[in-house]
Length: 526
Ligand code: FAD
Ligand code: SIN
Image (cartoon, rainbow, N blue to C red; front, side):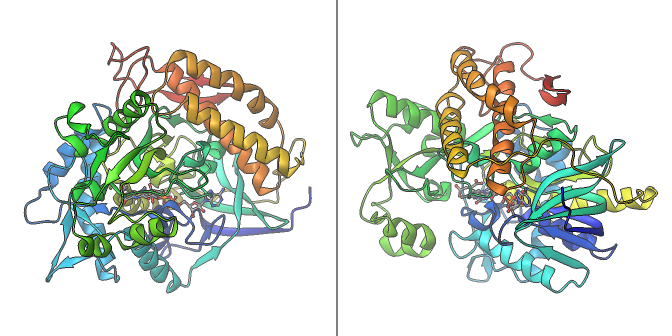
């Protein structure tokens, strides 16, 4: 295999969303930093985040109340220490962002806070109405651009981590047709979630679970992979992407109706439209089954037209592009895969079980979200835990002898080339399988069917090496498919966002977290 280039950096960050960028800012005073990212620097879930960022900064709020709401949403599975850190360090990270130029919406001179499901206070800061993620990404990229020691490599896809004697010493990157061996003293995974493993998802195309699959192949432990959050309200229309209609719309008074025009949420939960996300998603699926329809409606027509256009400008204009006017029509919606609570297991300083490897943001599982994430907690997570993972990495590098970075052979195994039509066909079918069998509502039978479909493809693809992005993504996606499905099969109870019709309750042992790792050719749940 021809390696085009070998490079050395003190810190390698993989991913340029909120977690990766925030980490890089912290690291640059301690050494050289390389931020490698798969596409344009902005292409990330962060960029598309709408509703806002939750933070206990309003006069009516307290850190303790944010803590309680987060714990409650997590349904008994949160790591309390991680939640305490999130809510108490969150305000400092947000104020710092404002000082760097973030323009959150205001009412007069005061920051404007909105309400989202399962929050007991108005605590969601937003920017330009419904473009909060874009504003955060803008400010972080601008800040990074002033820092000489941070280098950015766009369109550089991480293929695999380089691990020697149990220590991560960098990663192999693919840039065009070039293979780059990047050695680093510490590496931070910030590759985001895995929404693209489902056929209906709000996540952008780049979010294919790469970091989770790479960590798994390298011997990393993954945790809570059965907990996938399905957002209740993504646009539903044939041939149109599952564009998100923010929960903040229900926070501002939007109503759900079934296809007969009947409101239904109060039949499922006393909080109605503002019930926890998993409850709303399941209620929608139940109504869709009951009325034999593909969708329900989100009705905003009773709200002031001027207010809607001003408060949700991006959603208004995007829906209009697809011929839906949110001010005049009920909008067809149904759930879509949105966020994964599980990921690469880390402690609260981003450390994984592999020496020299750290993870932050959606790719990581600190346990902060438990079985279900409280809305708008993940942008905050990226800021707080991106910062902390950077400090974890700094401490590690200061404590340890630098790794010996001789020129090593890092690729071994058969390199396979797959036809792109074949890749796209397999990818499409597997995404559909995940949606139909490992989706909002699961059972042993559906999960076993998915496993039987996924396993032979996994067995074939996991043995070979790919050096083109599409095939690599497929290999990563099939790995994550298997991790989610195996974990969902092993969890024989319903808790948080994981709901099984054959185990509808929290049966004894539900408090146990499931971890998963690679053992030779097999996977082990422990
Ligand atoms: P991301 O922002 O997803 O960034 C991941 C980065 O890794 C990207 O740059 C990607 O290109 C790169 N990458 C991936 N694989 C590789 C690879 N192999 N090699 C190199 N680079 C790679 N959360 C909230 O708190 N509030 C909201 O209002 C909100 N709204 C949302 C709306 C939408 C439509 C979506 C999809 C999510 C929303 N979320 C929201 C969730 C939140 O946006 C994400 O959880 C969060 O932004 C994740 O940040 P991150 O830095 O971990 O990953
Ligand atoms: C939304 O705006 O509904 C998404 C918020 C989130 O995922 O936290």
